Length: 366
Image 1 (tube, rainbow, N blue to C red):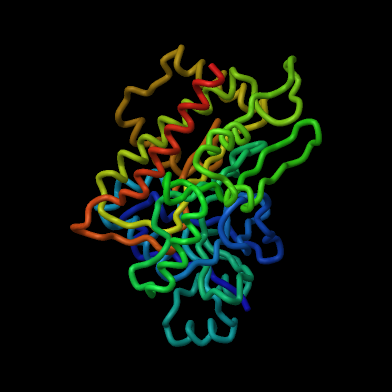
Image 2: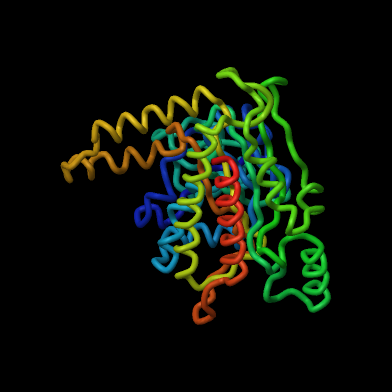
């Protein structure tokens, strides 16, 4: 079985979510290393720039809706960039579709293993249990040694069409964790150990076992201060000079997400915040030095024409640009617009909890 990259009809209406996709080579797809949440089976391209995520139809529908529905416009900066989808199809079926004029020739060319003229699509083997997979920008691709945290947000863990029995079971499970009380539940996280030269993963069991009063300690574990007394990295963690900007930057970004979601009428079930920060000391210092240099020299382009000219290229390169941190909303298989029902209070509670925890950690290290 093969898969072909397909682009939504909404591409022209929202370039933010639909870009020309780099070639996807089936022979070099690999399991996503360091996955800290979600279902297994997520793949990545060899260069690490893209992830291939099996999806349910509802999640694909929501990603396409984000691209075209102005009610969701405030959400666009805070979700992964969507390049398109990969569809399961047998090569013979693809040839038949081409002969009947049901498919674009360049798409079928890739399906049959030929090169694309525009370089925007590719061929890949995807998960047999899913007809389609999302092709998304890999949030971690611009980091040298990313520390990653998957944080479930919201207090509701069932869909509207769930049976009473399923609702009761899901909420009973959620009540055993921090989800119902705080709106936030740690799924898992990963840190880099400089002494061992390897990643350290913390499993779902840790997050499930936590009680609300223990969440500040979980933040200390994910945002540790280094034990090193020198400029040489040791163990896990960052020095205060690097960790403080990470925390303050994340607080500002998550506050923007919170403000955006507070103005929207939709419901999120099992969605997450994916939090990433740079644990490579040299890379983090380089980023901060460059940022300070830009600020001091006032290298902001006041020429509106130049700004417009550079805006698209800057956005297209966003996933490849060096960063100190990143935070995105992910996992929308059970998210939908709910006009007239107001904001999702459970999600807002979870974001407020997250902001309070980050602010508490920042104050601890200052």
